[in-house]
Length: 76
Image (tube, rainbow, N blue to C red; front, side, top):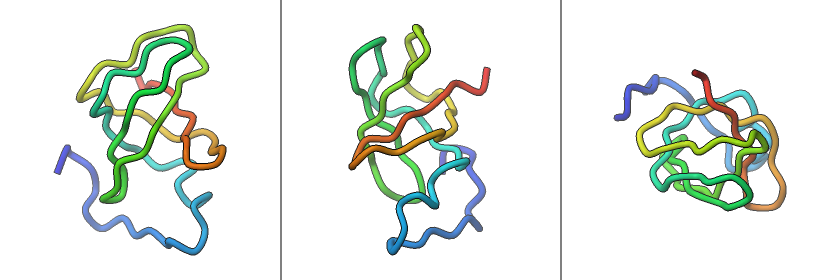
């Protein structure tokens, strides 16, 4: 689904395992606002520290996690 590797595994024991993984934007992420990404079978709130808009269906990479919110960057 979404062109991601279906063989990726995820451990619910350590959410920091998401760092470095790729996901797809499902709700647009605006500068200074959260959006949503789908990664490893789960939807997460996400922000982008870059001053850009990340639109739906864009592939992003997780660079940090704070609580339940992932910080992502565009791969373009």
